[in-house]
Image 1 (cartoon, helix red, strand yellow):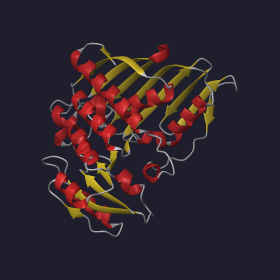
Image 2: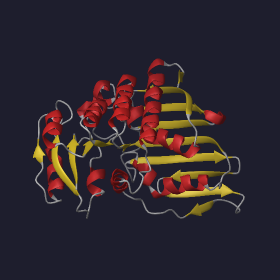
Image 3: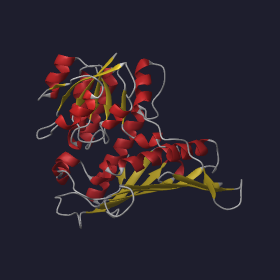
Length: 330
């Protein structure tokens, strides 16, 4: 039995719950806020669905001491992710953490050091590696369908809508590039198979609905190893009338073809057929079962701790580039 606690419930805690449906080897024992002002009681009905009555703590550190959990789900205000995860690692917990796992380089470095010492497992909620269209695109790249990857253009576009108060302040939010853009930044590293070398970025806070320092749009440009280049477009400008909240896309250009993902559709142009090939995609899967398998030693999560750290570092450095107007080296 894996004993699980929640530190915060302000993002995608549902990945842990949805991925545990039908399992008898997990126990959701307790929940606590990860920072001042956070409310966590909204998750209690979903936890009760699993047949347990979770204990509610005011202090997550006390919860870790009292409960001695096997695994902590970290999902608080983004600027507090790293501190909560560090405490969980130091308490001997495995960590399933919302992205970005840190919002500043000092946070990032302290968390990485804690992970290296802990000897436990960690993954971040980069769930798109489990989305059928994105995963199939990655598989095709591994199979050589487009030759050697040379250029990538990624897009993350969200509806603005109401934004919770903590996103109006950089200290608790961390920036739109790490929050909205980190998924696309992860796609770039994952699909290119390369490492980040440098980054330039620009951003704007215009038309942000009066939401404090929240950035509405940004454009990021990466240089990667092997002279691969990539751009990431990030915005809160997806119209309210759009059919879905997120308009997610990536175009991957190789020496022998081009792959393009638009939501749940996947197209390919290469020498295997004339014109545009509309490809079937596998079903989207839950990521949490794979992380549990990794804890048991019977499988591997598609997002390793190294993936989580490297994509987060790139997101932080991209935010630094946008803030400073300068190229940032890795």
